[in-house]
Length: 332
Image 1: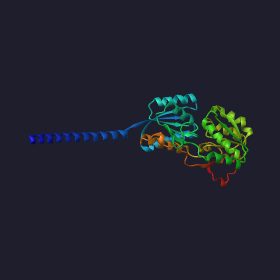
Image 2 (image 1 turned 180 degrees about the horizontal axis):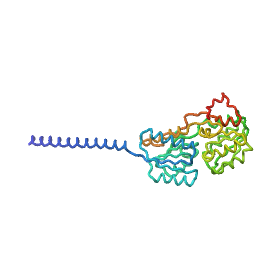
Image 3 (image 1 turned 30 degrees about the horizontal axis):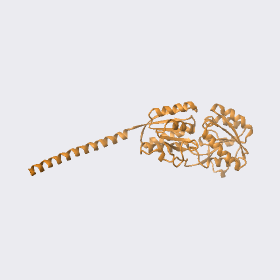
Image 4 (image 1 turned 60 degrees about the vertical axis):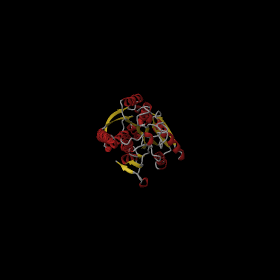
């Protein structure tokens, strides 16, 4: 009887081991299938760009390049607000409702609109000057929510520009045309004013609510200033040629806030590549989609490199000699 029981126990043990082995093979097979499916997964990524202009276009291009380089399969849902607040809000809500797994917001108004529309979907921003002041994040080191990204201001850019305008161009009055409705712009103007006090330079302002208002705003102050300083204001940069036409007619230099605007005819800028900050935001997106990181665990970032560029054609037209000690890279 004991031998019979022992034999039965041996048979039961063998049966259990066979079942477990089969389950293990099934699990391994399932893991392989899941792995294959993960490699084939197509991610839905939304893009909201506030307006068309070279700098923002380059940032979007850089963002896409980083995702392409990662090897991830991406289906993009792209929207452009064309600098219209209503379009911006509608587009943000549409991107959230469309089931996108991550949204790239290019420029401050678009980032704010997307942040308002979702507290769950990861949001990556770029082309934002003051992410903390715009209440997108709590701090650069700890964002505290579903949002992170790259800002478009280097700590030395505005101080260097104001110093150059005062000491090298000898200006006493700086003309600034900007959209007072953009938090991004107000933050920069405040910094310019603070820096201008050091050199006893006066800031003369004119507001332009839309790109169509830029020329008239520039004309209203051109006779009152020595130099124009066009910061990274989306409204004005999208209509930069209007500022250049008015300023060039009166032989007034136009310092600009980013390198793409130097190529368009601005006299000079302390800037960086918008492609690069878009690319870095794209790398953050990859770490979220591919590695499972959360936006609040990724610190927001400043541009890595700052350089000084001068447009030779613009300098020649103004009769300004480019000095070696400026250590500027010459374009055109």
